[in-house]
Image 1 (cartoon, chains in turn yellow, cyan):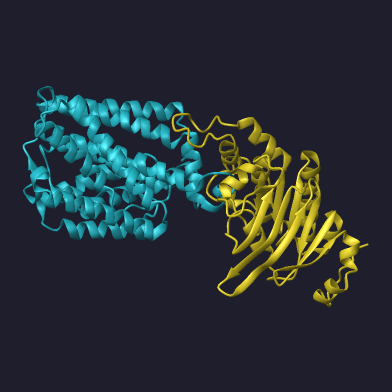
Image 2: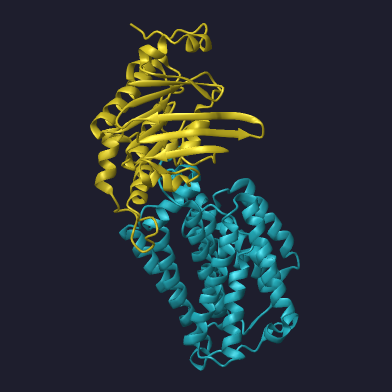
Length: 251
Length: 316
């Protein structure tokens, strides 16, 4: 059984169909990339899965269970965590607190009013910061970190939920080539170490073909191809959509 | 703002409470009354800051819960002759219930819509106080509150107020620095992200609203006895604005800032009214200074001065 499935998922923004009858399967432990030109509906697709948007039609199933239209905080509880295309952290809290808050929430301690917050999940917070290489930055104000480090922090927050599926929306957007390589190595290591299923969107074709087990191509809100990297690369329809762009993995 | 208090901080708090407790020894009735009233507004401002500073939701109608606590305590003590031990807790519970009800609607909204809805509910509370003459005595005011005998002298009442306000402030401090408080700040900082780590952000904001309303009710209940009466003005939007300005003046991103703001604003109002009739003008000027030059209030100013002293010549 697929860990995540969408059936005929559709989102209609007052006549503009951003997602059009998308039926999609994500297998457990695979690394699946969603690619497509700008405006293809990748982020909308993610927002529909994680409950940020309500679909106009269709279903989202997580481990066979219908989660269509479920509130984001409940979707996360089931084991589906995500990071965002634009930086999405708590800018005026410390790096340490950014991760600690996620752990407090995961352990359902966020309504404990009479237990000091400071001692909660200290060790695990330290471990997660170590995992993403932010030990030294722990006491810094998150909003003052460099862009690359804020992305690393986002990843730590997403992983803190102990998810089974990690959705990353353009994890390398805005990064230099070197930062991109480091970020991808990090994602690669974390998903392997923790046995996570990975679904991500990405523009950098080197990253896409380097990391993915399977690739789906979204165009005008529809999936036009889905399969192994080689199948997708040689698909004539995909070639047409990406006319002029190289789909060949770097040597 | 989210790190717990160190030993020096605890010692400073203890010292301040002891200094306040020494006020009656000065033997000035005027000073005792002034201190009592300021303590009430300190609690009122601290309660509002749970909502504004910690959850990031601005209320234009916080006086509603102050008024409900005050009127309920006054009516139960006087009209029904209840003892304080029953009247005051019930008054506080009524404030809490009202906050629970209003928060259910308000937390469906955010930002200016949230703020306007808090104002709308507060105007309803004011209208009830104004129109329900049989119970509240309308615009005549509910006067002659039957204050229990053991609180009937100035000094006893002062110590009662100091004890309740100190205990309430300690409880509020714990709530703001608890696991709940930490996640609440995260909700304020980024509601979307907090939702995506599994936090029901609406429920968090609802809870913060209820905490704020409940403690405002405690302040109101004390105020009704101190003032020997409740008036419709205590439920009016100007009362909500006053406490909001106290919070802004003190600094909403500091736990104790609003307490300082309450004391400073109250004293300024007292002294201005003794010499001139221009308090509203003065208030406008204060508000301008805060908004233009002191966005983090007096607490922010103090932090800036401190960092300048620690690093002389620094640009911080």
